[in-house]
Image (cartoon, rainbow, N blue to C red; front, top):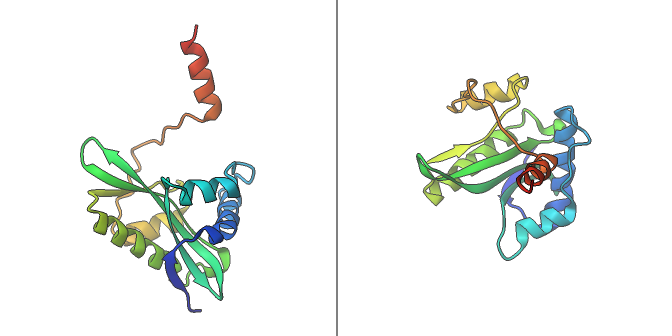
Length: 161
């Protein structure tokens, strides 16, 4: 099946949100998605976009996305973070994931970044193999650390003691 990779438009966000929810189901966290369509539209296409998104389109339907944003490394300088690379179930194995990753790497190269970061869940062996085949270093000796919204609130409450 033929597909094209392009920069996302605001009008693509309903389909982008659908893929985000599809990923959450795949990663066994179907109720974890809190981002709304309004969030994606405002945060991606407002006066100061928080992210850049590429979409893969087949038959006028968004079947894949790669969402990135700027970060800064104290060791390297400018980097970008690939938050998610998602390909719909029916398009896996079509080359769409490679085409999206290619676009992210070109984007990072054109921005002059020193590194592109992303995470992969430890049980997703096909994704790990895919990234390693592309030359990525899957650093299994690092742990992801997060402070979620409830954790932030609790932290702040403890500061006000």
